[in-house]
Length: 377
Image (cartoon, rainbow, N blue to C red):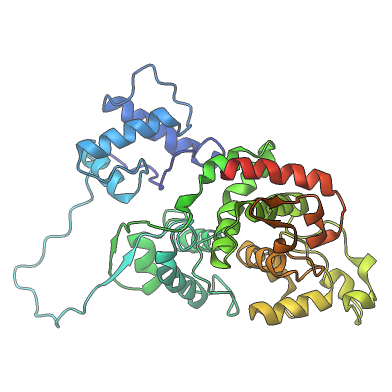
């Protein structure tokens, strides 16, 4: 019996992420066959609460960790239940030649999107992954190795898997690690601890009323929340306003590069655009759309990244999240900082607009911040 596609599946897959509809449908059929879902269950490809409950029961009955997530270990037990077994290894010759002592096999954790962000304890393993992707020329030599498995790293993993005829699921398991290091490996499922556990991230994302923005928020909100924690922005009012600013300025990642050409900024000395072509080269990018050679130079020094030579890096969500939080925390954009307007019971969301763009659309953004604050509490 051929083995069908086995990606890592999580609650919510197939609902906002259409690429997982088919494997979730397969999982639903399996749960029905195992009598963990009723035969009347619709095969709709939506990893809803009913399917999550069925998965957890299956995991409990088979002495697996009850995560509700269908990863390699759960798939392996499912395959055994269904009678799907790997091809037998070739029979060794009766008198094999003596071989040298085997080298220790390296062990790596199975990595997926969110590791190093929601789970900072996995940051070193993610850095190793990113370095190997640079070595494999999936990423350029100047790629930022930050230990955050965000959408950019996931895209790199998928490209590597596609080029090497591996299962393209964005999850770094045994075969992907083995191909990256060009040798045998052992893998294990890590215990994912710490990070964003204090936040109800799905609730925060669900509070956004626009489906197109919610689709981007799935990637960007965890990154922004983690950057807030990394840089000591823990006041809920401040976090709410940071998220509201990112939603207004870039739709939480939908528009990471300014739609206009940038020629309107040409020869703008107040922005530091003193060379031909600086206008379009240094147009707005990131969650707050930094603009102008002077701002790109400032943030190059602040973050230790060459944004002058590589301005497109400002649109990388991992970098943009740090740039957003640090700039608002420290008053880098206009001289106004988060503490000037929001701290504890003082929550002047209207005047806080001065942090980024004076009072432009101040009431509108304040309303967004109030909704985020309700979701954060």
